[in-house]
Length: 166
Image (tube, rainbow, N blue to C red; front, side, top):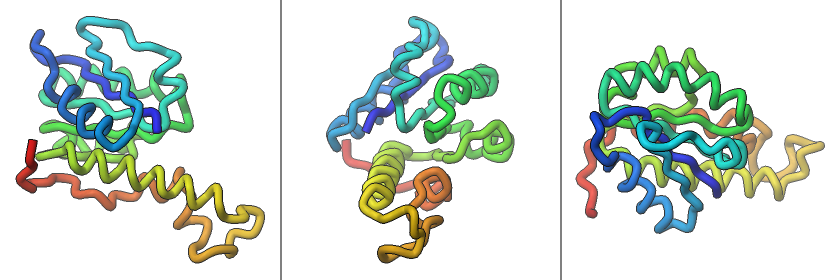
C-alpha cells in the first residue's frame, strides 16, 4: 500500500513524527513517502498515488498549516483516506473531521497507524474478492467491505497510551 506522511511544521527540527511511523509502516511492507514541508515541496505524484495520507500534528502551528493543506490534498487525491495524528489531532478532532479527515490518532500513534493501514488493505482485498454487483455476496455487506466508508470508521484507538517497543 502506498502511504504519504506529511509534516507541516516542527520548529525547524527533523520530524521524528514522520520517521518513526514510516519505519513501522515500512516494516509491514508498505511503500511510504515522507514530506517535511518546511524543507521540501509536496510531491503531487506521490500524493496522487497514495491510498493513505497522514499529517503529523505535534503543535498548534502545524495544525493551522495542515488545515490549509487538507483541501489541496483532497483536490490532488479525492480517493485517499486522510488521517491526522499527533498531540494536537485529538484535541482538534471535530474541526479536522469537518475538513474531511477520516481518522484521528493521538498518543502513541505508530501502532495505530499500522493497524489502520492493515485494515484498509484488508477491506480492499475483501472488496476485490466479493462480487460487488450483488452486495450480499460473501460474508459481509457492502458497507462492511467498502473501504471508502468503513475505513473511516474509528476502530483504532483515538488516543493510545499503549507502551510501544521501539
